[in-house]
Image 1 (cartoon, rainbow, N blue to C red):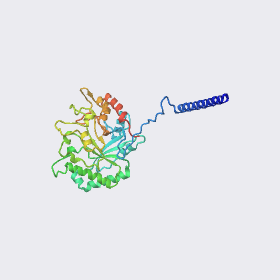
Image 2 (image 1 turned 30 degrees about the vertical axis):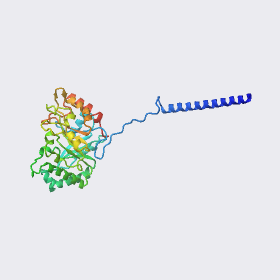
Image 3 (image 1 turned 90 degrees about the vertical axis):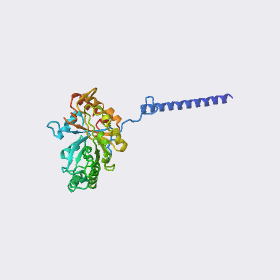
Image 4 (image 1 turned 60 degrees about the vertical axis):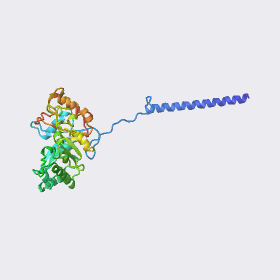
Length: 366
């Protein structure tokens, strides 16, 4: 019995010793893993939280944020080229979009415009406004006026040879005020639609694949409630973006307002109009929206100043998520709007520099 008892004790001791060694080994492994992982009391290392970079789609739609650009009108004796440089100094950064205006038979973009698009370290998208009619009516252009068609074909050849980069192309912006609804006028809303389609499709037929087409409205309730308004739209197959031009000025509360109100103005005189932003996202929900032109006058009414309205742009954009680009109209004096230049006062310039270099309006292009 004594020998058996002694053997059992030795066996139990051996088992306990082995178990203790195993436990010590497990603890040692856990300590090593803990030190290697840098774990500070969590069960696993924290995953990387590096945010994805913003990209542009084939239609130049940003995957995040909002593109910011300008039609930087010359101030004083400046050239358009110098106007853009001055504007960028005011806001403290390079614009994402440089906006220029053109008319046939002149070919575009010009050498200066191309230089701005290709300037090393300052990548800019071009937004090119084009009136191709050369004195013809919309109906004449749509019917294939030979002089206009020759100019369209020359522009197509020029683009293919000179500027293969993607760009925004606006065909005859703000057409509403030029509509003559009488049948046979050549300037009805359906004539405009046919003109726009003719120009866009002819460019495509001649191999222009880098134009991103923009339909640019005035966006006012007066025109939006007109019986012919819906007939202007050229069609989803030839429209990539929808734009409006809401200026902020005057003493009416709908016109001297924050940006969120300005892009969706209502008018008691036209109660059926839902506001441009509401109209666009309801009728064309898949189209990105931009402000092709907009500006804020230098004035203060009540508690709202230009600087204050600029400072509120970020909050307005959160209310209008379909807006993907803002293209400012910077000019010393616009009749009847007023002083839209962003450096019209020290307070406005300070607010502009703060807003347009951070948040959803920070620089989007590399």
